[in-house]
Length: 215
Length: 221
Image (cartoon, rainbow over all chains, first blue to last red; front, side, top):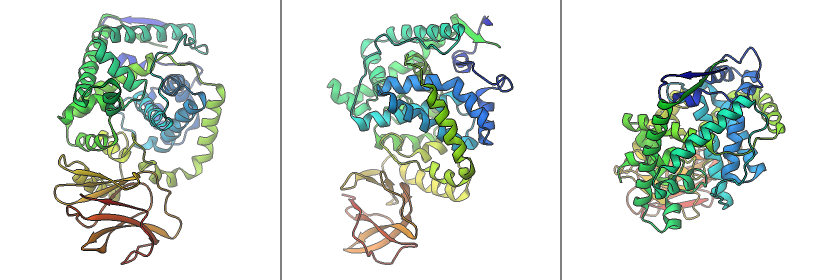
């Protein structure tokens, strides 16, 4: 069921929202971080559960950067196997498990895209809505996407461009400087100001309508 | 440029390799940046969720679980490899990031000592970075002359062999450390401006003088 909170601690609510719910009943109540602790003890069902929660987003992200199904699968597979091998050293105080995995996937994807010399920074045309998730989840994902897109639209064009080309296109700061014909210092400050502003906008948005999920 | 301002580029995985190395080393000693990075990572996570890509095929899940099952028996032997993943432009020194951000705790004391040395070199904001002739390694020399070799694509040394680092002193190759696989290797000898550094493949434990031809060289000039 959906619960609207009057106030939630800014964006922390976003990371804690679950993804697909094809989960084993006994693990369903565990946090992502607790699953990582089980994965550190080589618990395969915990790995499966975590994949079911984050794998869809991870693949979507890798595909957005790489625009290639096989490469996107490689990026996701390497990230999850990296997690499997080194889960024991994850420190939950430092970052959320979902952030950790998505960062691993993104780095891998960016690394591959730079090697492949293929860049497709433009948005996906007619990206299909996730089909293998429940109606509530699809609704949440859409809402979340709209919220982030709306915040992006509020940024000055040049800041939005720098962030989108870097994150979704895999361009490094020096590559962006070359592509946009700007000094690298300009690119760095656009990226910093843009991301700081985006954080504020998302925080504000999260305070106005804070959604969280309880099962 | 103030290193703090690189936090955004780092959270978006948009730093160039050299700067990534510097920033990660800086992160280890900067609480403000660590805090800021956590906030920026929440934004990049939101961007990840908002990207709108398609769903993965079901076969991907099966493949990951099967591979995990196969690796289960030798998880321990893989650990060491994970702390130095194959270096690439972005994941340049994941081991440093690990320590800095605390994502991967490093719990072997030998690795911690290595890490301290690495930070002394890579964390020096005045350190100079030189590329190797073939671009597969970077030589980082701190102001003190303490130096590290950041090795990118290189096959792990075969059984019974080590990679040996040499610093050329007045034309003579002096031993400067051993390593077995790509990653960060701290030189046991200081590097003066203009000196050349080379790497050869030698028998386990290294030799007093190089026997093979250099795999790559870098000059600190």
